Structures are given as structure tokens and as C-alpha cells.
Length: 150
Image 1 (cartoon, rainbow, N blue to C red):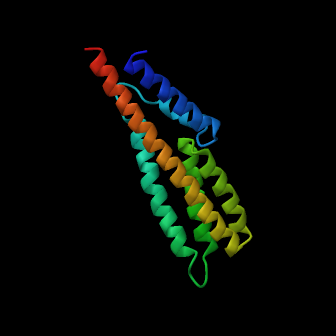
Image 2: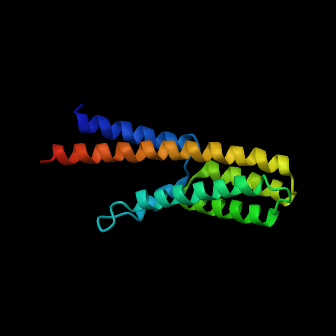
Image 3: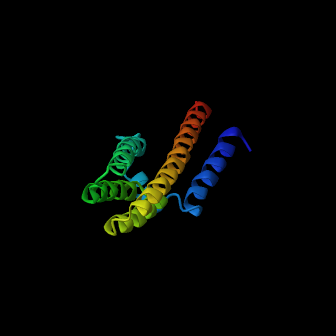
């Protein structure tokens, strides 16, 4: 097996594992289908925006949850936004953690909210690391394919 074929196989196995582990769902596939020659970095750009937005929201949630009088409507709005953006890229486990977070928020359960914030952060950093590795492998495969076809 040549290097490109081996990279292709490793990339396919890695991508498959993201779905098997529930890190990503079919929404990610749908996002990939929107990418074409006219916008070859579409998925990377959308996911990068998700990373920026999520980190801002996670920081804001951490600040809001340490206030003396917690504004649960603000917490709920941030969690709702995070749930929506994670849903739009197919970040399945982040989305699920946000659903649990919203329940604690509705109950105005501070301990539950703090626990859920940690869970959302854990799932977010997991999907971020996995997708960064995904894009790195995709780049390597693309570079290997281009050098192999010349």
C-alpha cells in the first residue's frame, strides 16, 4: 500500500471513530456536503467560528455563574446559543451536555449548572482536539495526494 492509500485509510478510520464515539453526528456530514471547489475551506472556516464562539460563551458562562445573584436568563441564553452552534456543526456530545445544562438552569440549580459547565467544557475541548487532528490529517492527505498526482 502506498503512502497516500495508507493516509486515506487512516483518515477514514479516524473519521469513522468520531461518529462511533458519538463525538460527531450526521450534521457534520451535511456540513461537509456544502463544501466544494468554490469554497474548499468551508467546513474548516465554519468549525473555526464555532471554536471562537464557544470559547467566548464558555468564558461568559464561567463569569456569570460566579456572580452573587446569578442571572439564570443570561445563563440560559448562553447555553442555548452554545447548544445551537454545536448542533449546527454536529458536535453531538457538546449538544447533549448543553441539554442537561439547560435543565439545571431552568431549575436554577447552581451546583448542577457548575457541574454541567465543567461537562460542557470537557466535551468542547474533546471535540476541538479531535477536529483539529481531523483537519491536520485532511491537510496531510490533500498535500500527499497532490504531490502523488504530479
